[in-house]
Length: 567
Image (cartoon, rainbow, N blue to C red):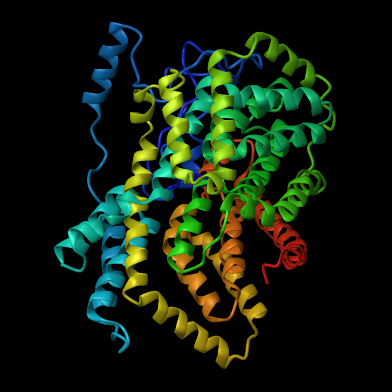
């Protein structure tokens, strides 16, 4: 989510952090900072200059409240005229509609399952037909013949037209509380960026810990963990707070993107922040959208986590904190920066804070609202306030007090896109469970595991590893959850793995695999697109840190979860 992260390469989202009224960390053209995810993973294009403009200016305040989505406006009549001429002169307009090859493959998968694969005796025709539609939908999510929201809508339409599902059943997930909590979380993240509160918090940590490169990395890592529970979008944290600070510090040290000098400082800071973000997202239930979705899907399979915010944090705390502390040091040894000391960073941060001035009214409102929301997320069960209602209260306060306006909410396209395609995937997954498909699959796998005489710990390790490494085929954390989480959880339960242990471990894994490739999550796109890290290094360090995280979470988590009574 984020990661889902909220944003995936299968969705088309827009996120900007610049406006004429706010001093920028980069010298930019009139275009907004944007991350437009291509329909297919043509991933090296992320380094295009249309996304990042690496001409340095002073590390300065991101101060004035601003909106993150703006139309591109020409600065003069001549500019307008030239723009129009350029547009009309374009001989080859981009093709419209679905991409033919991905469309054929996606449809062929569903048709093959429906008409050519023998239906198991235990499965009803309705369930088998829904499985075929669901598999076509998932194939389209990976191959992207259309943006994922559009493709999900077509899958939903097909399920209704073929009378596989009734209209009310097909749309039932649009009232799902967890999905609306995710949508509102996007608006909270926008508030952090618009007010500059996230930027201020991170700058303070740079001031306090930034005298050395390693200390600077720890300052950025700790500050992300600090704001993560109240800013539930890894992509927003990356693009709206941390990448601008890292880029400005790197440029001030003479470390330029796409240049040999990138190794001086920028490559290490970007790589460290990118890898640390996975553990920050795993530490808190509300730090990423996919966390909430995982618990909702687990609940549909009968796995209930009581007092989820506290229980999630308690189970994740020890392995996640150790991993957060270890990541900058491991990368400092394996992927070292050429510049070891950054004595000017605290002074730059201090100057920036002076430019920012005192904390504004909007920032104080944002602080108060987030304290209230997080408190209700933690203690809501005791006072009878569900998490989504707490989020609704928080958003209502931000609107009433003018921190956000309704245009901010309307222009948050990724939130509404998420509502559409999440609801379709969650609804289909829920109906597959109700119609017995998930039970049939889990029983089949359980029989296979029994035939191999695997104990439940062995099955747990095998299925967790498979769930993790399958993500190399996905360009979305939330898409991965919607496609595979329920099935893998059901298989582990059938193999005898304790339900809560299996559910939480899969959910933590969903965050950890967000940094294994340059397309594995929304923040991956942002950090790779900055131009400081090369593609081979992304894969190499992504795999190395995946192994390190597996060791930390596997060893520390095993003893910690035993101590907590998860098994």
